[in-house]
Image (cartoon, rainbow, N blue to C red):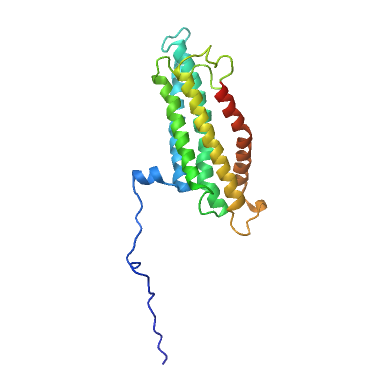
Length: 233
């Protein structure tokens, strides 16, 4: 009877019990470049701002429930109107879909191990979070937050008609979140075009990923112009 002898795998020095322990807990979140972690961070953060914008909407509707109500002042109403629209559009809708869902889903759909530029991806999230905090911090300035509407039409939003630190912080916040969107757009486009699994042609890519690619192209066209306009403003 033939006897089969299994030869144990010989590992290098110290490889038998070697384990790689990275940071855990809060440090893992703070330093992670994993697209899933960053995607979930986008989703949770943007959903928080969605809830906060909902509270602002309730306050405005409460003021409008009865004629001549004095629950909040006219200036506060304009602040809430501006910040509600800003949170819903700049800090929730775009980051939730393009930052959160795209970060989590696109690499999985194209068979990529991660985004093309993982550290740039992490930087994008922290720029978004920093811009969001800067925007909300305008409420704690002397003149209050921006009160010229979330579209910031000139001349209502220029330094002469709307002076103060709050409006300036709103502008800086949009510059930061704009760079975040630009970096995310570059990352998604590079990931889809250069990190697709072998044999996965663009015509086989799921429609969600196609949507994110088109959105990324539109962002790269529009947001640099928006950022330049904000800097001039």
